[in-house]
Length: 94
Image (cartoon, rainbow, N blue to C red; front, side, top):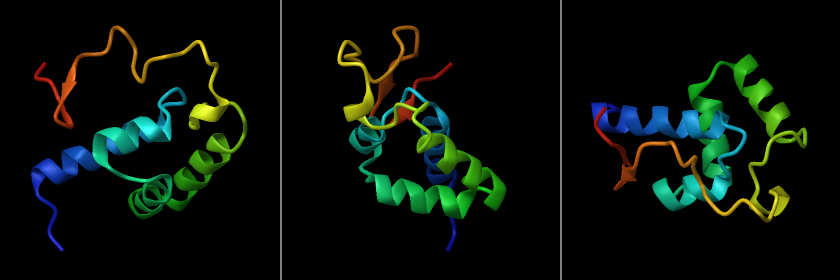
């Protein structure tokens, strides 16, 4: 299986979003169409075992707000107001 450059960029962005505590799984789903289970499979495949274990521990620790149900209801956005606009699953040019 060959991964082209655009797919690699998407995978890298998904991993980055998954590591961010404030980015819920629902935001990744709306942007990339991946369920929580698919994200876990991707993370298990792409990360070293120790990194994956740290990530899973953090997501399940209660510190992370990866599930919208656990988030403060006053937070209404998926991303920071200072984050660059993301269009069509691609990060805008820098």
